[in-house]
Image 1: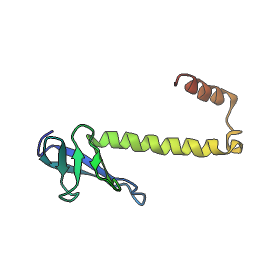
Image 2: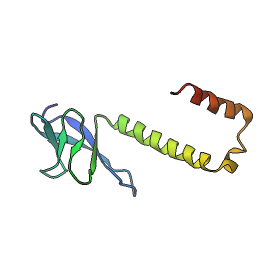
Image 3: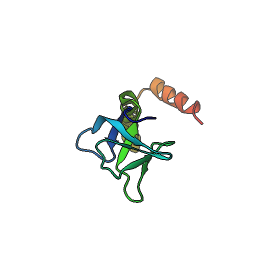
Length: 110
C-alpha cells in the first residue's frame, strides 16, 4: 500500500441509502494508514484494513467496488432467506423439488 492508491470506503450502519465512494490513501506508516475524507485522526490497520478506534467503528474499506457489491448482495439475500425461514407458513408454497435443492445445499456446508 502506498500514498495515492485508490480504494473504496463505506459507512457502517448507513441505512437510508447506500454509501460507498472512491477515496485515496493519504498517509502510510509502519502499522497504520489514512484515507481522504474521514478526518485526519481516523487510522486503519495496514494488515487488516480495520479502523483503529476504541469506540464506534464508522468505516469499512474495500479494495474494489465489486467486492463491496458482492458483500451487500450476500447480506441482502441472506436477510430475505431469514425472513422466509422465520415463519414456516411462508415456506409451504415451495415445491418438494425446491425443498430438496435447499436441503442439498445445506448438506455441502460444514
